[in-house]
Amino acid sequence: MFRFAHPEFLFLLLLIPLLITVFIYTTILKNRNIKKFGNPELIAQLMPNVSAFRPKVKFCIQLFSILLLVIVLAQPQFGTKVENSKRKGIEVMIALDVSNSMMAQDVQPSRLEKAKQVLSKLIDGMTDDKIGLVVFAGDAYTQLPITADYVSAKMFLSSISTQMVQRQGTAIGSAIDLAIKSFGPKERTGRAIIVITDGENHEDDAVGAAKLATENDIVVHVIGMGKSDGAPIPVPGTMSFWKDKDGNVVVSKLNEQMCKEIAVAGKGLYVHADNSNSAYRIITSQLDKMAKSDIKTSVFSEYNEQFQSFALLALLLLLTDFFIFDRKNKRLTKIKIFDLKDKVTEN
Image (cartoon, rainbow, N blue to C red; front, side, top):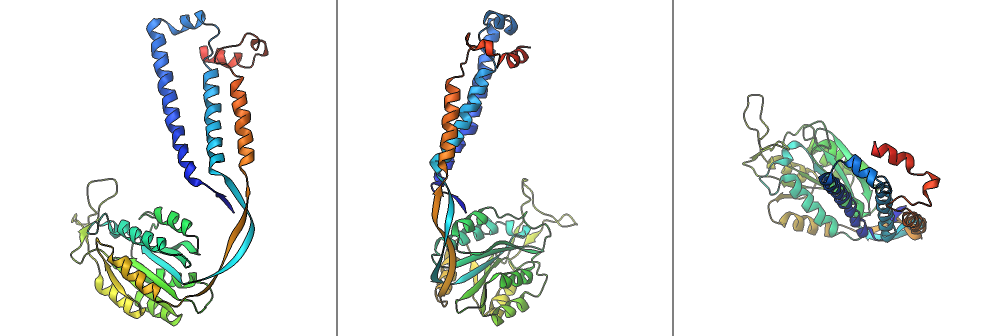
């Protein structure tokens, strides 16, 4: 497994586009100033030792050196030893609705964003549990297999959008079925499915799927997103809302009755999410009551440092940059390395 020991240093890579912008701006500014003195072609003949190509080469070398040095600071590592560990926890599968109706803003900032905030807090509160993620609209897909890697879980969570599933709808039953199959072998550990949805456009037998989950000793909790009086659905990238075939604005409403029926069939709890954190607190308290047992996990316990090759290459590039002059060097002119490129640039 590859990882960075200090990934926070990778934010320094944001300097690269900034440096490129500054270099382009200064080059344009320099060309403008040259034009103020006269014809650039005539001025170039008066400065035969000035190279138009070398500064660009030096800048590219410096830029690549910065990239390598940032990687060195981030400390790349490869895992070399796998260690199996046991810890007491539960297994939780999240079934998240990503249909267009989840873009409605009757819950701020939107139903989907609020759902992601709840899940983020849920993941932050986990220590020895496993979590997985299923996204669904008209179809259901496994976004994250059940894992104890919370960093990956947060990463996948941040990338979720309504564009992930092409076919629209709300196939809650399919999502629950897929979540059931995502659990490991039956053990004494508590297992739960948390469905986060507005319950609208119900297409399949979600209640039957919830009952099947209970037969497999899995509890199904439901978090309802939205309000019963509903809200229009914004069209991404515009100031308008989705409309039906007659031109009327579509108002998406929380199907609270359906959500409650699924929770009852799954012997779980129904929670209505609002602009507070009550839904997170209630669900967390329910999960804490579940039976915990030993969960086997495999983690890398030893890592080999891989920064040396990046540091060596950065050093070689910096040495190369040191021996490349901005102006043509009389002693090096005989080597004819840059002459051809300079002539092309001058023409």
